[in-house]
Length: 219
Image 1: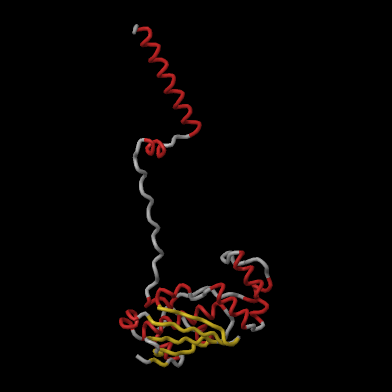
Image 2 (image 1 turned 90 degrees about the vertical axis):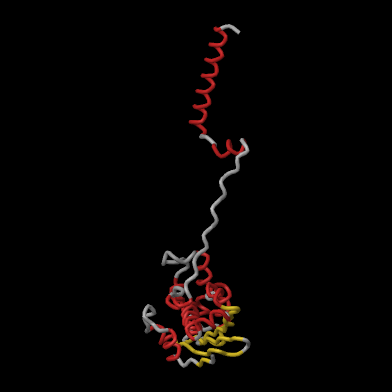
């Protein structure tokens, strides 16, 4: 092959390189696809980091936001910027019945919102119901390990948090909480809304407060 032909081929190759570069500028490069074509495995995706669960000793310090049923009745769209439109629509549709004390509406709200859902890791079973418009009730079966390690502290922490979440969800006046272990009642207590509303939960002793509310412990 002549030197002239070699020069011509070299010029053509240089032109092709420039055209590829221009094409990459317009359409973007795809390094991952190129690596795949070369037989290289893509880097593994990072596993989702699970949301940490609150410690049982502090679980009573926080609670769900209180539903303002009067506002839910008055407005067909949320005004707080936090509640989803779909959930607010449910509140709005049930607000009149809830405010009238309709326990069927109470039951619908409990089923739909599941206010105690976050507490399932701390109990072997948990239920809730609305026997009257003024009273909500929950029972739970203890986690044996937590009960053995924490005793009254575990029971009271669960009791306070359950009561707070139930009374944030519906406008009842009190919440009764019963704890079971091996089929036996180990705590039975009723938390009045009036007492809960007057407390600073950052400094509350849940055991003392639960005893103040008339708790009966059987440990």
